[in-house]
Image (cartoon, rainbow, N blue to C red; front, side, top):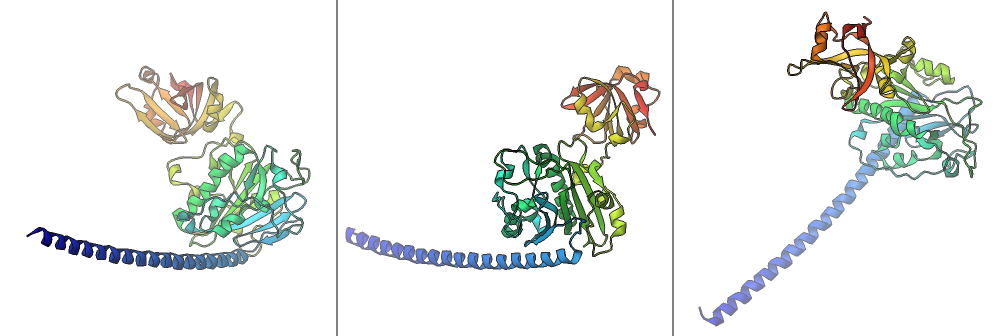
Length: 404
């Protein structure tokens, strides 16, 4: 092949490649346009689904019936929550909403668009009422409960859905409670009806920060009432938490719905018959997977003077104390001949442990790792830190009182 032929071939190849490039470029452009169109159609369908869910949610809330209070409130209906606003306390006496199983796959992020609620005729609290007050703007209906809907999540930032909570409640045990309830919804794939509020009464203190525009009452207690009225087995529970540091295990704060009604003067379910559910306070259905194999710490109010429960041990480090709880797990180490006991929570989530070293085992008339399993005991001694866990070293069985 001479140089002329080679040149002609190169021109032909170049022309073919050019045509291929133009063809694929046009094809790529068409595919990208189709993708944009599909995304637009998908967004339109998603909006319709969201609207349908919001409509059903509103009907479900109405079917249960709104709470009734013995004081005056203004009932305000939003897309995914309803509230009874107390102008006297400048916050809602109750906020009712429903948590849907769709939260498991919801991906709407926090908006933090705190704002006044224009639907409250008397006006609501504002930013200046909370700013530099020392209190968080605590959500009553949590924003994370609405992460399947941008509309509903944004509405959760109305000041009508806020109440003053100390940071040690709002960011710790209150957040843990919200997660526990969402966990139930995801595990059971059933929607939950939830009512939340502060316990409002005469004589509550108000926030005193400079620049405030309203007098916002500071609740001493907060409640959350939960009803599973959709599954085959109807059940309910309530939680009552102080507005401050909560040191006990979450389920210690579980109470009956009846008890919260007596405390608040609210009738949470006036339109449906749930008397048996309201009287109960069985915590077992509300345990998370992480709580499996655990028992509730002993109620401090029922313990004799001078004795503390397992969760209080960490506040008595390097002090002599008598710690009471249930032995939920034990381990005997052949290498060190030591016995380890965990009270109320198993390893690796233990909150308090007991160590009986090998040379102390001869001071026991029984094998502690076998005999003490599932027994409620009180252990006396010096509380020390054992790799981050409060622990007592026991040298004889006299230091262990068996309660049952």
